[in-house]
Length: 137
Image (cartoon, rainbow, N blue to C red):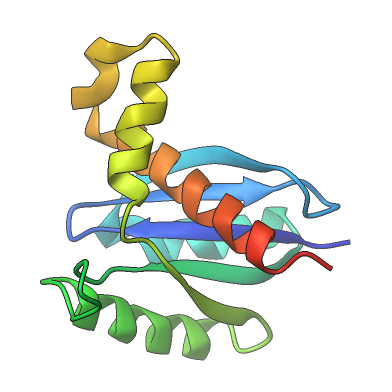
């Protein structure tokens, strides 16, 4: 079976998470500079059998676009062109960063809450976990 990855895209950094082959468990993978994202994804596609790319879809609490929503829509278009055999889907990410910081705190790593790369990886993992829960087979 193929794996699923998720992206918590930001203008500076992108957190990335990945599932196991049975698509049950979401785990943090890495954080990359967003300018290097496409290069990283091309390398990842060579190493791993990826079926779906889940993009965290950022909106405000009222559902309106945030400052980065349009960038994420454009990223989806680019991913669809670069990886035409992969499914590219959106997943609501409104609370992912706050949940990530809370998770990091609960893990006893309060001082790491300011580690933005760690927050991005954990947020990507939360996005992927929520996608898996909402799409259980």
